[in-house]
Length: 102
Image (cartoon, rainbow, N blue to C red):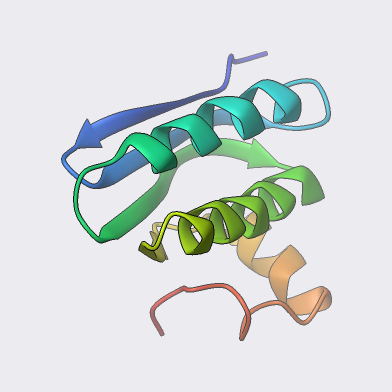
């Protein structure tokens, strides 16, 4: 099993990686929220291209990060959403809620 992480990859870009599940979710929630609050600038991108596997926890994290960004006065977008996360978003009808480019 792979470890999960969220790091600042570049200014304004956070890279989410690894396996997103109930074990990794709480730490990612805390770390991501802290990173979003501390980012300089008005925009934040969550890059999910290094996510290996995700349960619905991954989508929950993205929704929480949206709330954190809004509270910090930042515009959030998501890129590189893996197929499994995209499929769950469609089933849950979240594809129009999440800030994912078409």
